[in-house]
Image (cartoon, rainbow, N blue to C red; front, top):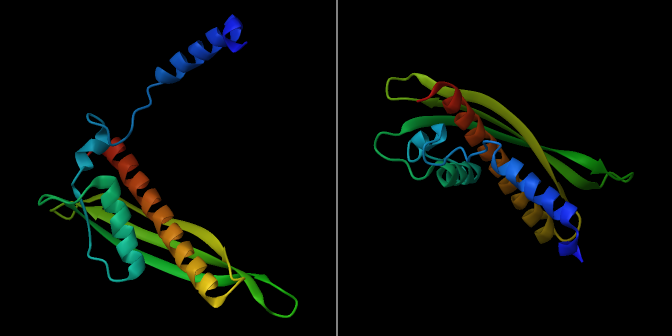
Amino acid sequence: MWWSDRRRLIATLAASAALAGCGFAPALAPGEAGAALRGRVAPIPPATVADFEFVRVIEERFGPPGPDALRLGYALSLSQRAAGVLSDGTVVRNVLEGTMNFMLRDDDGVVVASGRILDTTTWSTGGTTAAAAAAEEDAVRRLVRILADRTAATILAAVAEGGT
């Protein structure tokens, strides 16, 4: 029985205590550097469906922007290419490549954080036309979420290093 193995129980408790004492704290937790960004990141208005998804994720991470928010300018670029091609020329897999350039500025125009993020995702073109279109839409949504999450992480890291 597991409870009768005291060495395993003691080792598990010791490992739990070590992890709890490692100093990990969520970046947006009260008192942490990132908490100062709660409600203070205002992305420029979205222009495309992908931009709307990006803004939605940023607002999930930082909350809706208030009146004294920092301005988040961004340029999202997506491109696709064939990745899996059969001998007859049929494309069975596509790659979606995304680039996010961003700059977070305060009211005086001082850059608080900036960066360029690149990532990719793929989708299968097999099945029906509707299934392939749904897979492509999902790939766009996944890639934009990845880019937004990485943008938020870069902003949090910059604020933790230099403050706002």
